[in-house]
Length: 165
Image 1 (cartoon, rainbow, N blue to C red):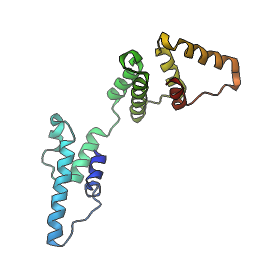
Image 2: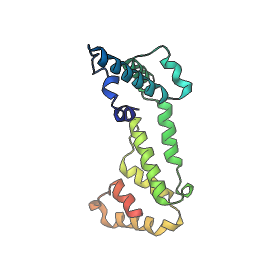
Image 3: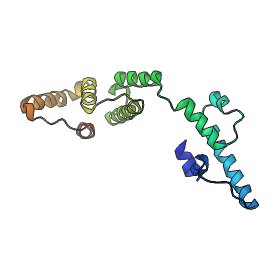
Image 4: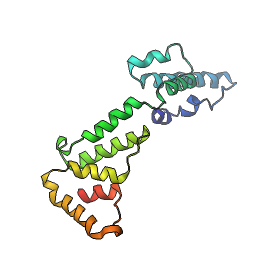
């Protein structure tokens, strides 16, 4: 929603950082921009949730209301995301790249919900889901780690994913 407001040049008015002009011509234009910002906020949320904005005409007030309702950490959403990432399977995708992209997106969403998924855990989750077509890669990964011992340096998730594709 923030990006939509920014793309239309309405973000600052929504944040209340633009003051009402005193000139009548400019005030009419400013009022229209206020209405446009408020309208974009309203259509950006589900129709079933728009009742939260009933009676609110000011875009700043609408933004603050949306933030107060939806800006809090949602424990149920966080748990759903974590379950989704744990049950994600490469066989559900047409190619491994799509699976890895979805995995990384879900990881980012988990982190936004304050669920920390360190890179090592992510790599092992991915390794555990790879099918027989990747058995040589998986065994080589584990053998390399074992052979190097304490000198082993864990790859970043990004470099690991790149080496898989």
